[in-house]
Length: 290
Length: 290
Image (cartoon, rainbow over all chains, first blue to last red; front, top):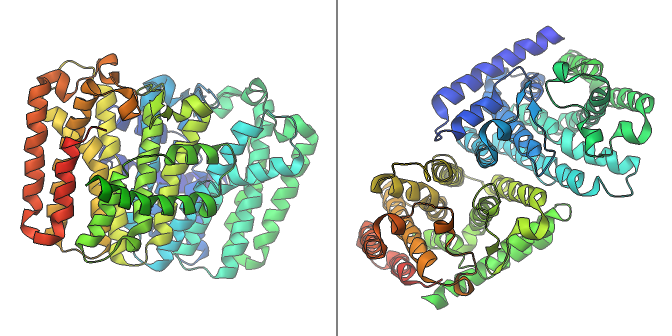
């Protein structure tokens, strides 16, 4: 699976390079900050999901290059803003100093804004049919207060409070982490013409997978090293954050990640060959070490 | 003119109230921060320009409610992020403590992100024709690194540097301030079907008017009071910012604002009755005291 991930990452990186070189019109040093944040050895999970969504619907990666780019720009902005001192105050990301450490907080703030806005510039230039408008509207919805931003809101405000039960935590993970995975997969599949039934199944698949992914992230935060992950570890503990691991222990977390992976796979196991890569990816992600 | 401004502001405030009450799905306290930032006694200049754009094209305000709302949300987010300590570090806005002072920096950051993303959620739900997609793409373009964010980039990075000539300053004002005025006016006019010639004339009108508006802002920053403006004054001087007034003096600034107002009016003076309100507004804005 790692080879397949690398192939899709390569496809995405070519789109990204072309965007940074020829399409992004932005003054220095914010432009350099955007390039700094976006380049590196990421898994490019969200672009890959967008591509797999297109392939699920019988089309190919190149039909959704701009959707993948938009979703990954949104992911990139969320990391920059999340790392800032007023949020998680992290200093290491993808093996490099975080954007505000390297460029200062003002530039980091604007670079994030530029990436979020830039994602929608790309989408409004791209959309050319009602299917594509619907696909783009899903990106906006699941990146926003119903999805990712909504999860971040709960994360920074409730997280240090007293009560935090399992359902509340899983609901926050579903927004914060599954949100953009849903956006990525649905934008690819919907813009390429999947049915409504398929849309619902893919949404639920990405939702369960995202929660499993986030729990695995919590596990790695306790068990891996900064060298392997390329970002600060133990930061959940540092900030006294409640995570699945801190609330229920490592073993229960591993079980839960497996359980949610199984639920995810069940959503799309009836589609035969066309859902094979998605299922393989989902299994791979909870076994990952980075 | 103030009465007319208040009528349009009233129309906008009704749309805003309905949005905050029924459409904005967002966890506390970020939701409260968004409402706090968006409500108040603003002139609602950008919504008004959007409405006047629609009327210029023979349609009415209600055809562009969502465009006006999106542009004002983008304006609101830019003020929240601009006021933060890593940017202008202002503590007073619209007669109230700024959002980060009232809610903390993390909530302010997320509220801004929520408003920017929310604007595009609204637009993707709204657009239903290629004219409307084009109108929305102008909002994204002129709010982004080509426009407003681009101007902010130059503002925070070059502004304390050595060389800053008149053309560089006016070009920065054109991006930072005219950007969203262009977005507002064009989104209204283009979505309602103006011609390409009209589009260019309206763009140039809003561009010149925006520069005149910003120079008037610089003048008020030196000559008015915090009570009247409802925001910190003298902050340009505090930050050692170069403004038209600090570089060329008060008299030259007043002349320049008049000159740019004249240029703006010239762009649309040939349209007779249908550009009357825009011209009246433009004259009013450089004479304003708030």
